Image (tube, rainbow, N blue to C red; front, side, top):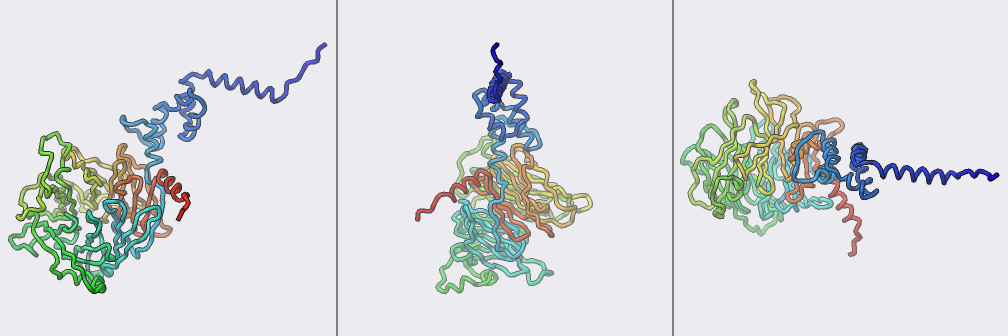
Length: 497
């Protein structure tokens, strides 16, 4: 009688493995699709490498659509891209990782901006110091200057197109109790941020802007033009003189206010109807309303611009407004035309900015309650300047710490895919523009103190880079996982010098 042979453990395992493989191979597509629906994005990418059938099923749009909804916590339509690429955009290309923290300011930082090329960054704040940084894998300080002494402070800076000068708005006062007097100053970057031109500003909160690389905008009533009490936008063209004694570049700002190196002429005259100019931006006329179905000339003269002004009502219970004027910056006579567009705002604007391509204007606003206080909600509004007939988009979720009678400026920034804003909540808010959902709150928390975020700025050519500045005197640079990976690869390349 033949003796029965016992199978080894390895033989049993091979049989089981073979049976399991056959079972998995015979699973239908709907069953596999249901099983795969329990996987996360990393697991889905892993099963793609198993076989062609699993790869095909793992690419199903329904899986990645549900993962995107799960990641964002909301549902929204998106028909122009695959849901897999959409999830990758939100998780791999959004600037949500802290790359670097820069220090050097001595007090709260109020504003930050990039130069047009994205190579330079400027910051200013309550310490009266203006700094220019060189952006890169490791951002480094280039220039720093104490332009005004405390309690005076600087609350706005902006590069000219040539990136040779900064315009700076500052509030000047002798002591903390004194009412502020505003001044606009031009700083020469290559001369260590020396003040090369300056003028008093009639309106304390009018921050000014550049018209050309050697001309900035100032708002005035009668200091220079005595024809009437209408508000004028004044073009200020400065002439920079080369000084033989380098010590003269260290003169305090107040000594530059009386220099005669600024040529003034009235660019725009606005009828005095109970509003005062507050914040201003300028775009080329060719970029205005370009997507509108209304036929108009596509070309424009070299000097034609659209001036966008946020005007604040002199009465607290009257709505404020955004007005749009067409001007010719080379005209010898001031424009006295009616606005080409008015948008009434039943709220207070606490920060405005333009996209890098000047296609969109974005501003933060807080609504006024019936008791004269401001609501907690801070709405971020986006206006399509290429089609001004569109209704502004509203992005919600940002809130102030409490209802208050006092406002704090919170400057937003906008890129092609994302929208960001400072807040009073120790975070910077980051929205996805397609879903209008908050995809991240970038932390600025301090152990024992509040730390409001005053301003944010996207890199003009890279939406995966964002900068924020806060009350803790620090500049934070946020990047995406994609940029972090690229930075690491660059740092791993050996230096052959």
